[in-house]
Amino acid sequence: MAHLAYAMGSFPSVGGTGAGGADFGFIITMAVIFVIFYVLLIRPQQKKQKETLQMLANLHHGDTVVTTGGIHGKITAITDNVITLEIADKVRIKVSRNYIATVVAKAEKE
Image (cartoon, rainbow, N blue to C red; front, side, top):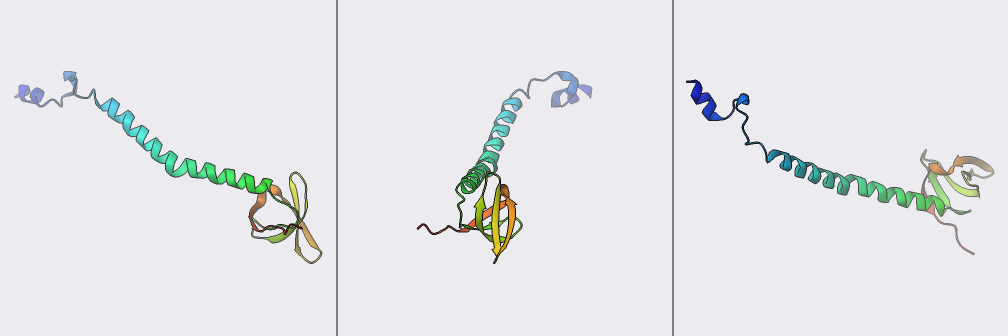
């Protein structure tokens, strides 16, 4: 009866060689999963980050912007890290450049 258990090939002490190709299949599976993650998650995020950095670099006096907090305002002054926004007549606030979310309207060039 014990010889039947050995014949089935699932007994761990036999030292079978049937699982040698599983390592290569695992590597291929992991590579495919990485490619899918790269195409669906990493590459679009890098592209969005590049566009955001370009938008922040191209801010000019007179642009109408929205902050990440939802404040709409017009740029009245720009320094390296701080932007002054006019949110109402004679009401100005200072906002870090990194907290500008979008440019609603570009300033008209004269």
